[in-house]
Length: 638
Image: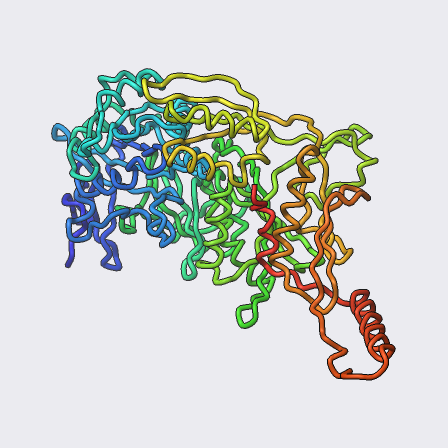
């Protein structure tokens, strides 16, 4: 019979030795156990960094160095199991893994989480840190401290976690580990001598890092009660087993067969399976304080599981739930509608099912039903950023098997009515009549941009063109500066990041956070096609630049909308005033071709008949708006 991946095994009648042991269950399956006396030999930590600084590669080396993955099984981005993650080379979902490591004759259980690095997935990082006592902060030795490095470090410090700084990629010719270590000390306040120099690619320094994790990071806090309290920090849906719940046990013990209760929803279930990812799913008999793993309890209703809820025993429940997570604040919104492409159409119900499953897997994604005259029934979706929106769309199409029509993204505005009531507006079409409100406020973000010194002037000009307010400029090193600006979120959600990268040849990085709402001279611009307003194309713009933006949008629409048998006017209006217009000419049929002679009145008669027919067609005809037209608002040729 095959033995477990852990080398200390015993029969059920024998006592487990050290942190790990294993027993042979009645079904013959190997079940991993843990010695209850060894709680202080557990280390829970996350790997955090800026995007593309080597987190996933470092996680690969940790798996190999602890012999959780053999050299034959090893591959790049081992924990990134989504095709989308491997194609784009980024981490989208945090992955929790349990491994073992020996230090000075003691065996430690290491529960670590590989987190995303992009600013749009910072909610994933904050949830992962909630289940940890420490964090490994990875910094690229060729690029130094970048914007998201600072943001993630502050997230960890804000939760009172202990940090171990790691300078990665020291094997590259352009590596400057000493300079980067000094940057870490100067910007983050972590001593340069505490930095570990390593190369996740070659494995250099990995053993030193593992020893530091075991010796320096604190163990789990002592249990506050003997009653079970476990925090749900993630979940996903399995077609055969139902909802798979990822938990971190803080108090008490959870065993297979226990009747559990979700303290938030009040629903009860029987625990049918417990396990850990080592990194392969491995069943365990029970989990105690400080441990992380997965729970299966035949949960079929997706709404019954909420990230941040507390699991307790139904027969002996805890008096107070664990502190959960703050609700994520979605700042970018757009509408998804089922595609009606010939041969590839799908229904509203299929799209709803796909969104339900995806919302369980991504707690920062929200949706609610909406209806559009042009596109029918769909969903208004909220995202943390543009990359988040792009990833959700691709996952819906790949994992859900649906094709969607996506409208242009918008941000959240605050509307103060004349009655004093304050409303949140996610869609320009929801704005009431201007006579009923006093002022409209737009979200402002504090943007930190780290850029090479020679590009500072170009970035200053870009931020000023986007109505930015300069706040500060800090020298990080001889070659790099950090600029702090306050910019309206609506000005950066379209192409600001692309322009930032192109201006600096890819060397600039940015991070932003919402700091509040400011009143501005804003106006809702309605787009009318053949005299009928299309709500999916309306947008809110700064009044001084609304004319230019509307004109650019109409030029794009003119190229995207096909010509019809009648003339189609395209108009942009603020209230009752038209501020821009374009015209799509009608397709003309030469009705006088058959008149090869005779009086001119014969031709006039045919042309008058055609003119009346076109007028009638224009009054009752409908204009088909292609899917590409709804994304034209993203690029107005500025």
